[in-house]
Length: 443
Figure 1 (cartoon, rainbow, N blue to C red):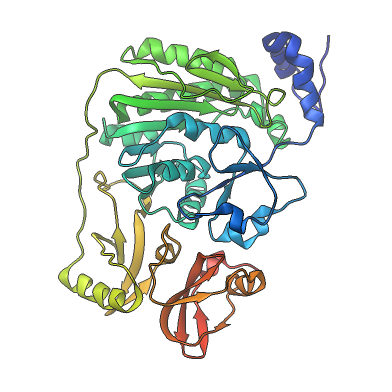
Figure 2: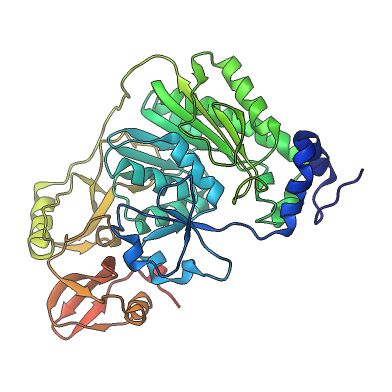
């Protein structure tokens, strides 16, 4: 029998029929149905989502503070998206961070992190404590990842643009937990992204499997004994999923299956440590998740190195902080002309780092130009002066377009809407000169 679903490759549909058997017709029917859409609230920023939610939303059962939204809604255009109140993410993909179970104070690596949904969820689970490294090998995608980390107010994260092999050669045994959301053939996204169908081929599946194994081989070196490794893809191919995990376990006997903390409701479990998410079984796209543990026990290792600010840097910073900040906050590292507050991290010499912890501001002669990241960090009550726009969306949009606002005081301050920071301004007693980054401004 020949299967034809909206131009899907014949080899793909034949294999899916063999894999799913009696469930195949239900699976095939989903290609004529709307895709599921979701957003995850950044809990570190938003204390009471119900008080500011602009929409009535249904919860996603496998991810905390996550919700489905309807096709007609456009949450990406709301000012709450600009201020990092939530991250828009495919619902099934949200299950990966939940499987990792990152904890405060740990050292965690998201090895293939762009565009950043899993990184932001992991950061929330870590409650801003410990070291989170988000890496992406493709430069343009790494830049997007860095912007999302900044927008969501994450201050304990390093954003890198490196190959997994390079990190593995430098940072053996550094991490307590690692997630590898591997580049894949994308079969699980065929409903959501029809263009992915034209890129599919048997050869591409095989190429992806080879690349995924190489990435996992690097990841195993980066994980400490006793650490947890979560592997995921958005594809249905056994070559990229179960077969790959079996090959990895055979090659690295120091790894063992580790039971997933909870099955996603409606998931089709391959085993207690692996599960498949199918669109005909739940409201989400196709995904695969496996969880492994490295045998033994041992503390993660860091060969730390940092360039401390000079005495003059700290004097310049303190003059700014005394005038502008309501709470004590002190840089512990200078990178170029930027003062940063960084978690304890490995030596970054020779590593392409796009973002290192919380960027506080640039030293410009004898003054500080505050960084946008400091304004939007995941904290409240940090600033001496604020321009509270309450829930005035129109005023917030004017700010996001780079316009000036009326301002009764002088000096650096932060504009807020719904109690969340938009960015810096500098008041002269009459108006607030807008310091929202030009590259982020709305048109």
